[in-house]
Image (tube, rainbow, N blue to C red; front, side):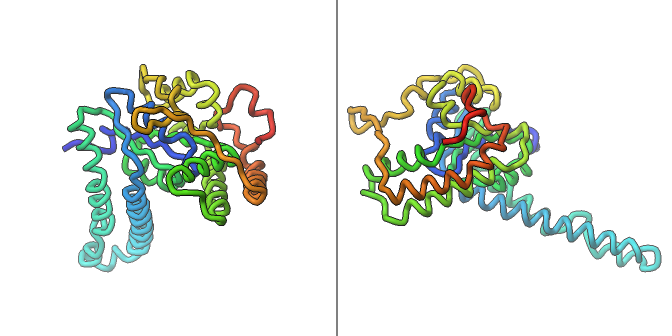
Length: 284
């Protein structure tokens, strides 16, 4: 039987919110013939978070019960020893369910001839990464940070072309989601398995961004042309450039307030990969 915890090294690409560079990073990694990154599979990761929490909950209960039971084992006889199996059924069932979830993407990658697989999903929390890494400890993650002004202007333009202008309260919910996501990732303790990258590295120095992705994910010779095409889209045979939208006064105020709330966390995050010299500058 294959030991999934050792044999597979998934790659996770995420950000606080959409329009932060996750799709172009997915495309870059997919240029490796041996890798495949699946899109937007949040349901799988949400279930893994629940199963991870269930295992931790029952593991704590199991340990506490064992300590309590140890006080009586000497006088209580063999029947008490049988009250709790070595691994509680709730824990073994949760493990089985988790690997049932992880089996299809792993097997699909194998059928495609890929040795590496992963997921791309904006809006994931550190809990999602922790759950995936609990079941597959060799997980490697990239979190892309993009300032709210840039990301919301891009979102507004992208949304308007497909669905019409966003509703008046969209900016509030979008800014709050961005703020919560950035705060969670930027304030987390640094770990080798997780790399935080400023979107400016991708947009201003694509070659540096490619080298960072290759080194962190253990890949080689990715196709950097994917980065050069990051701001273009195709409609039929015509290639169009997506221009960021202008903001209303209200949207501008909401964006500035959210960015100001994050700035102390951003300044304190010394493991965010920025452009040279950007660490000394005030976030914009």
